[in-house]
Length: 396
Image (cartoon, rainbow, N blue to C red; front, side, top):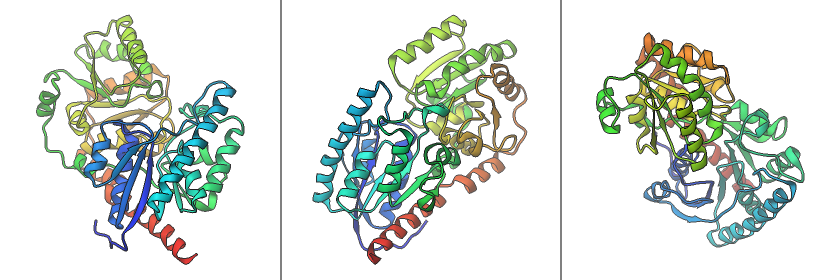
């Protein structure tokens, strides 16, 4: 996509983590859109990780400044302490803003209160991009104390010039009826390389060290309880009963204690010959191509990036009907939806796709995903949003 580059300007981008996951991947797409407008982007990560180098390779300057704990759970005194810590972090970020003099602050997470506060104090326009759900619908965010959800909505209403949500599920859960006049829905996007992959299934499996002949069910995502691995492993014996040679390939890293819990569940269900943990996979497009079916068994999902990535590669997807997945997947056309917790239903659906592969056109499915979630339309939406905010600032 070509876009007109205006007067160069500085932007500060607040990103919660640089560890490989959906958030920094989407964040990099936002940064690319900012750069199309002529922005020099300085990225402040709350947590370091390998994707920091991806941002630097794109021309960003970066630093690590811990922040973003105000929506963590725990007793009231700990939640209050987190409010105070994020307030202190906001003061540090404000110092950066006074030095860098940006024309825009872009906060890429609901947890980014510190960045939004700093922008308000320094009178810099702020876009707040929300990608999370609260625990009342199975998400990982917790209402802060004091204030609860009302405080979250007040902060968004008071501190953000525009609010971006990635799905209707996020909009309803986080915002409710607040921020109605300043909120825009921009779904996540798929990088072009997923559509352009030419690797065969056999070649992909050789790259990953996976067996060529066995049917493989892939489970992508970081190792976190919200991703539903336990639900999947409880359902897997039902697949094994009909497809004895099936192998489940699980990607991602996470809390060692949770990983051990999953290993114990594998052993308890006698699945040692049917499950392999791959850890972090450098190129997820290769992983999707290597699999016969991708299963996303999440208990909550703000959007479901792995679903659109797998569909872009052409691999059939089975996912739970939770959060944004119900919006992302067109049941029976681009993928298949099941109810979270229904082990029989998910086992039957996965088993059916292994025994009778989806008859739908892979090309048609990928083209539909490109139309709905292509990177060009995503960057265009971000460019239009940022241009609007900058024009408002010039007219003030």
